[in-house]
Image (cartoon, rainbow, N blue to C red; front, side, top):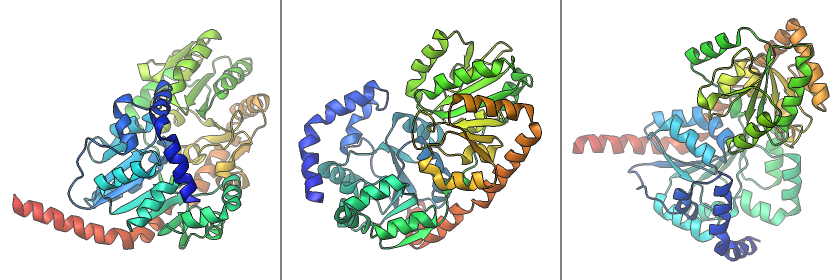
Length: 432
């Protein structure tokens, strides 16, 4: 099966430039860094131990922040790969020169080999469900340990892998460890022949979103205690839905402020056009525009500011759950103090939502009318709102601890690299 996959890759190679150009037109790639996608780099490999971490996009990157900070404290060099221009910008702003960022090389045998020949990582840590056969196979061939962190497997993905049992066994058997979010995820990976599977919990529950307190105070002052709600991590169609909900709610709450935070910033221009075409007064955070008393919509069009937006309100609808499928992380509003509302399409965060729903910390809605009705109810009933917020925080706290357990699992792999890093630093200091 891998030979078939490799053959398909060889057939697709001539179309790489076209594919990358198409993604660049959608603001998902940086043209000046296309060469990284084929395994080339303008950066030299640093001396000493190097850990390669991979996160698909900005959500997974943010999940890894506490883990990255801990590894950096050991003076181990980090190579972080991601797959989107938004995540690349976030990494640049968040870490500056403390680590090396590269775009993930496309999963062709020659590309992966070129990448590994250059970087020669000592350990590879992959976040969640980034399963690429050529990368996995080549790392195993070189006997570089690879570990899947915060691993999850949806019903749909599991059933798909089961259909190709021979391929799944060949792939998952090559992981040194699969560190899962839940017992249910662990059982699935075991059935797919992963040799060592352990449960640590969800790393997202240990990642508390931060924000600048002075900026938060300025925006809160400009809102003058206006009622508000937020639609966060929205996908196409959900911004228009949020504006319709705003219009419905304004009949009862005429001074309402709606906060819209799209998941993909390359869609901001399209969202701005929707707001303009429907004659909404809006402010853009990226332009440092403060909401006035007449502002209908605050558009959250900046990277890495989710903690800021969620602290402006106590009610949050989590997107990719009504107009798209899969859902997004509900622990972010739970930890920052907002009631969690969502559509029914939450397969990617099913177990997290089950805990929140069981503890009455979240509410699922079927459509925009139901969403508007429940937001109105929460605005009218601060007692219910505060009870749900408290329950959400308690649920998130009970789910925390994954970072500590993950490091306990990683310890046998990290300790030799920590010693290597110490010896390398001592040698460099002696040479000076």
